[in-house]
Structures are given as C-alpha cells and as structure tokens.
Image 1 (spheres, rainbow, N blue to C red):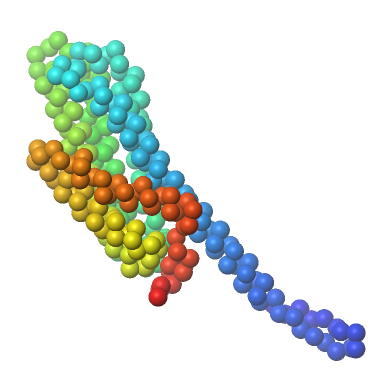
Image 2: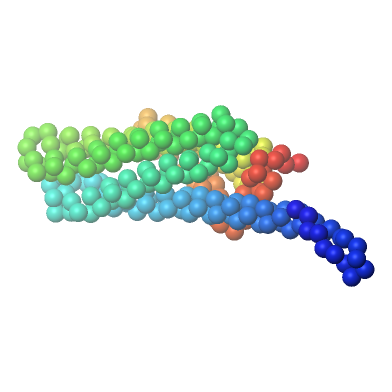
Length: 249
C-alpha cells in the first residue's frame, strides 16, 4: 500500500506501508503459533490428569482377590474413575487434530499416521474402560459361581487394552518425533528424548502383555518427553519458521 502526501514545496512524496503490514502479519502468525502451542501443551497435561486420576480411582477398587463383593459400596468411585478415563479420549483426539495442520506442512503422511494412531489408541483405551464399567452390574451377582472370575477377566481386559493402546501410541509417536527432529519444530534434544523414550515404552508394553511386569520402569523415558514438551510449548512454542512450514537450516 502506497500513501501519497504533498510536501510544503509542492512535490508529491510516497510513503510505503508495506513494512507495517508485514509486521502486523508477523505478529498475527506469532499469536496463532503460541495459541496452538499452548492449547496442545495443555491437552498433553490434561490427558495425564484425566487418565491418571481416573485410572488411579478405578483400579484401586479392583486390586484385591475378592474385590467384586465390595464394588457395590464403592461403585460411584469406579464410575467417576471410568468417566475421567473416557475424557482422555476427547483430549487425545484433539491433540491429533490440532497437530495435523502443523505436521501436514512438512509431511502429510506423518500427520495422517499420527492422527490414526491416536484414534486407535483411544478406541483401545475406551474398550478397557467399558470392561471396567461392566463390573458394576456384575457386582450384583457377586455370590454366584464364576462371577469373580469374570470380573477378574474384565480387569485384565482393561490392563491389556491399555498396554495395546500405549504400544500403538508409542509407534505413532516415534514418527512424530522423527519429524520434530528433522524440522526442528521443537529443540532437537527434546525430539531425541522422544526417539529414545517411545521405543523403550513400546518394549515395556510388549513385556507387560506377555506377563513380564517391567513396563512401569520402561515408561519413564517416554514420560519425560510428554512432560517436558507441554511446558516447552507453553513458554516457547513451536519454532516460528518450522511452524510456518519453512525449512530450518
């Protein structure tokens, strides 16, 4: 845009507003970048909160050898825990959806793959939660033969579905971290922590499925990435050039 002004000696001068427009656009992009960054960071933390608290409430009631006989007295806690676990479904899908346009600028295949793995993960987690909820009506038949055995199977179904969901997430997150490393959307040291942590997480879930209970220890490297990433996004955000789809030197 050119602004034409007449000077005191009668000459016409032109003043370009291009730098002002460019500055405004740059500010708008920066605002959008930080908004997206902070929302995605918040979703990572909310996922930890919802599923962690919900799982803690629900599984604390089903750990004993004869837990079915005591469920009716605590069914509200079990239902509340299951509800919080299900809230994680919306959170994880939202993460994949919000990540998609950012990742798509660099690799549509990775963007689709990460979103797909998030959807598969939440479906598996939801199956596990529904198995826990089936314990509530089953508790009314606690005295019948085989009821406790069936309840134990439902608890194991939730545990297996969780491990399979985390395994799926781990595979998808490896490709996410590869893209983060290549594009430098976040610092490379952070992407490397994910590239180390998620394969270890996958190994831990496989071990748990086959009855080798070491998965809790093997989740620590992957959790480091998922805990540090949201705080980085809150305070620093995605790297500006990479966020706009430009190659980073």
